[in-house]
Image (cartoon, rainbow over all chains, first blue to last red; front, side, top):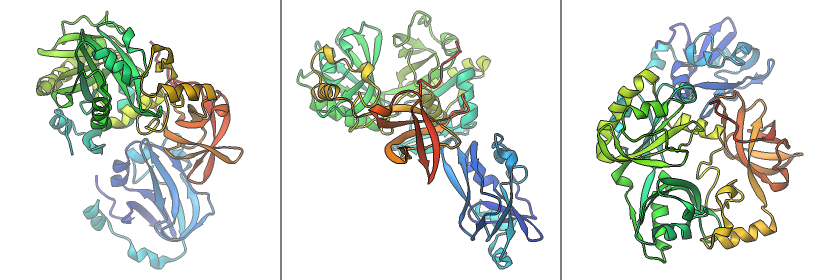
Length: 124
Length: 361
């Protein structure tokens, strides 16, 4: 599995696709593989404001619950409602259709700490 | 970590291995959901060699077993097996077991992996009839073949007629040329199927033979992950989660294997006392709305914590969130509305009829 070159990554195994001041966020291939079959997602409320590092949502596999953290501070502008009942998309298409939420970035300076695809691939 | 004799086969098959009570075991091969479905719809193969085998031998072997366990094992015919609890002096469950009446003066007990040494030590320390008790766990490997095609598949590998073996009976004989196998119609999935005890040294013969025989049935290798979802759909107890040294068989839903009229056994008195006084809590099945409950999630009624979840998962077969947990006896009736605190948010739950799953054949 390759990691899209135009995405940014965190050491918590999240990816960000940034367009303007909005980041689309999901979990990486490595994360979904470690979790196994995903059967439930608890998405955040649209409008919710999150500080960087706070739990944004929960992704649950058959065996385990995993928190997904806000990779940068921001406000939730959209969530992927198509995942409801189709959580397996996170396993099959983690970097595309398996996106979780969109975040309006409030502190662009925080983007500096993110990894590029090559750096992330080295730890994944 | 300890490994079963099938370890290399698991690695070859691409299994993901985890530490399960000191054993390096496959948690999944193709994926839990796919493996679960394969067992429910076709047939699956499980390495359960981590389970322990303890033999009782001698003229009073079954009497010695009966002294230790809650079920009426004296009723067993040769070739018949029985599920039972083994209790401590407080009536708490030391382990849940299967007792096999193999031959005159020979009784086999299958114990849980994590309890191998604890059970053996307990048995030896409570052996007033001084029968011969031997822990032969390392001499045996064990495979479970579970699912609607289990009998057809296994029959291609053995001359032991399988159709006449009823549920909780067993035969002995040769499987894939391996002598000395015990073939029991038992399991932990809710499907028809068998558990086969074999000499550990024959593992290299049996695994490939079963794989080859399983091809026409699209046999799937199944790890501990799906083993757990399969058993949970049946509300079969997992020792250490749902029952333990501090829960009695009456609390743990095992009254059906607790025969107080059979004569004395260790733990009988406190169980009789508890039955007379009223069982304070009961292990129930729960269907949870919207969220997946996990072990130790608090169970509430009207905002007050009344119990705790001991097992929980999304049911692959039913698409429901299932849980098992203890609630006060007066809240144990099917349909009782409760709530479960799942990491701070309240999910409605209802006590449900169990087993949750019933096989369609």
